[in-house]
Length: 280
Image 1 (cartoon, rainbow, N blue to C red):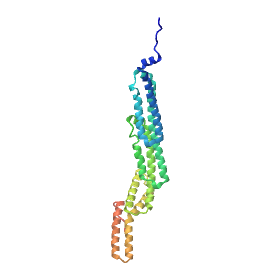
Image 2: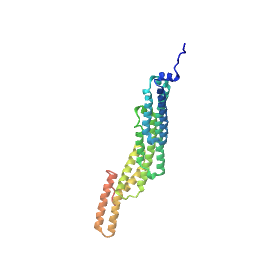
Image 3: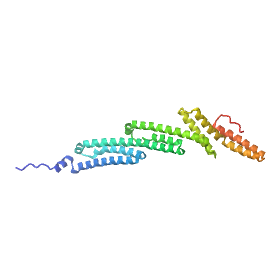
Image 4: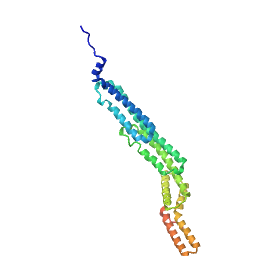
């Protein structure tokens, strides 16, 4: 009686998986997936916050791919690789959250580095640097889907809170710098007068909103405003004095009237409803 013929290991694999290459292909897909995860982490660590939107998208794609890996596999392959699939999905989710958290931390690092530079170079500091921080924090999650917005809500909230504190401190410093510079800067054109007016109005609004508009600050701001408001009329009055010294009385009187008109106009732009001082 002949001995029973048992199927070889290769034949058992074909029977179990439909094709000897099915399992190999599935394992290769898993290997590529894990390689992609490592590459994504490496590239994010190199580029940081500046590529955060791209990597947030990549993270979400990784998670979606992990959930779709088994879609083309046969049932025997799915059953064999169930644990590997769950591990891949868990790794994708951890990586996605890590990428987003890394981006948030790097946003704060880049922000602090920029602030440190501006404090070392106050001549480069502008109120708009603070506003840029707030604008940046507002769009941190623009590339996230609803799932990741929910997963990373606490980290996002904490990041925005810290960014707000940094921006407030920076804007406070910028306004104080503007006040002192405006009290002393050389005025050479109407554009500088307009700039001083705008900067002082912004400073008043900011310190009022923060409850920090002290009498001392009010006095410093007033000095800068009055200096700018008087500039054109004082320049015209100097011309009148030169004409008068030269014995040209008619041009002198005309220049004095022009100086008075300029003071009325400029005083009203800085101090609406307030009576301007005398020209002399």
